Length: 337
Image (cartoon, rainbow, N blue to C red; front, top):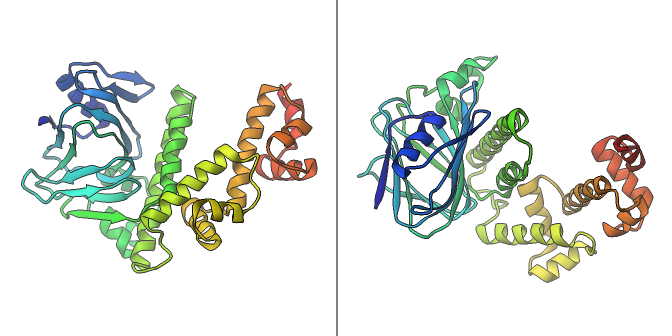
């Protein structure tokens, strides 16, 4: 097994330490740092950024050719980690001789290592991985609060008040497609430099809020039967992908129920829990995103776009377009030209 011992906590320093092990370079783009995994080690990349408010973001995506362990062993207080597994799995331990815990695809965890420990990430050879970690330096993060920490609910206070990292925490949460979608948004975002950094900063807080919200729901409703099981989440994910590629042919929710072998109520429940939207709202958002793309291309008029989206009413299209973008499609075209 290849072991990479990391003695720093800041994203930039972590990536430069890893680059020394892998004998490669680190690219910097307006304080976002990226390490491309060299061919002799595998494929993919590790990248991240730190922000002045104590929030950082680390992303691991790729595959190693050999078994790999990354051991974060700094003696300083480690950041509080909010980890979400988009693809594959991650084995975690706080020490070499400590219990190993596994995170699976679409699972999340809130992890804090005790003062005398760190974090060990283990990767199996030739297994694809993709996970995101929002890293919170609790001391700096607190300094940006405009209210007293004591006002937080006790279950949040215990997490964020432990600025010295005295207590160990490993809390796994239910499967969430909502967080996966936020991470995919970051992947799809094409702007660079200052705009991208601000976008990642906003999205990292969005991931943090989603995971804290999920944690709070789990604390309050630990045995709530409405929580989707993994197989339900997988089906909801398949349905969402189906809608994204077949929005122009979509008829009704009964069609989805028959096609995917899941009842209507479970589909609606799944979309509400995972995306905070009904199926129809999700469908309209997919159509509207495509509408913007077609309007920007400028090759179709509004009536042709309405037809391409699978809608039968131009007035309905104008209505939902204005609700979303605060402007009519015709006005959008004029402003664009």
